[in-house]
Length: 85
Image (cartoon, rainbow, N blue to C red; front, side, top):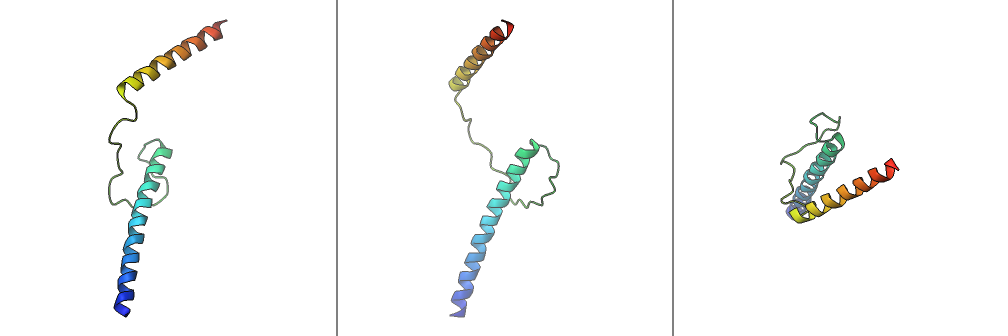
């Protein structure tokens, strides 16, 4: 019976360590975003065992980016025209 309890505790510890590693990675990612991607230390000790995950693909397709660009150019052109008046 004690060996069963020991095994359960080992599994619980392993699970908590995995959660801690994931949380440490998220903390590091948020700290990098707050710093603007610089490499300065934030004063928070963060343990990272693996590099942060990178985005696999772009959030927008090429066509969506072009449409957005055209909309924003039109918006700012209109804004400049109104400002001159």
